[in-house]
Image (cartoon, rainbow, N blue to C red; front, side, top):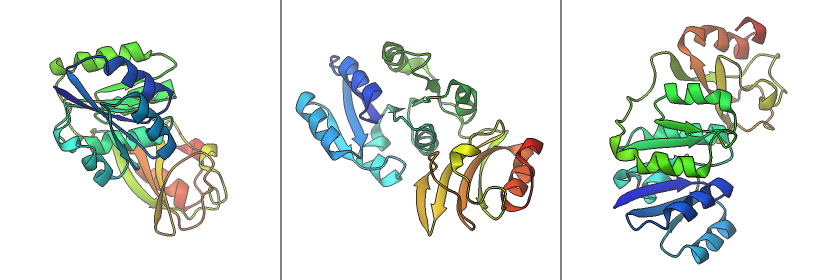
Length: 226
């Protein structure tokens, strides 16, 4: 039996559960942090295991059984969350990692980071995602990471970015902010978060642009020069 973890109990996640739950050779575990949504899903799909929590936390992933899972589908509505889940999942022996992106322009970048399949609701139907899962046995795991993209931590100093919302600068063609640490609290980098001086941000950046990106956030570099 294939062990499948789905992260996100929204429209895409529920549709996938509806499609996959009809097959006897799949066991599904759903992760979501919405208690009410999980309760409704459990009422409708009794055979689906549910785990409440933030799937960007490795403990939550392990509570959902990722160490013995075959496939994980990161299907939340936030690209940065799905990316982090995909990166964390590469530390386990999964046959396939599938991530949803709301922005089709992110697909190439996600794949470079070792996510086996990246899908966009704008381009892909849930039936197509189901086919990716069914065909998972023939897919070889890609290696962790990429030779031209890296995750780096930067402390925000530049007046060019302090006071700006992440959505005003994210993503660039060369980087994307995925995490923001404010007062020692990690926050997923959503568009409405305002950057403050001394925030620590985790940035996915092209290797040959690291110095310029660091300068942009710490000095008075210009985004157009990156």
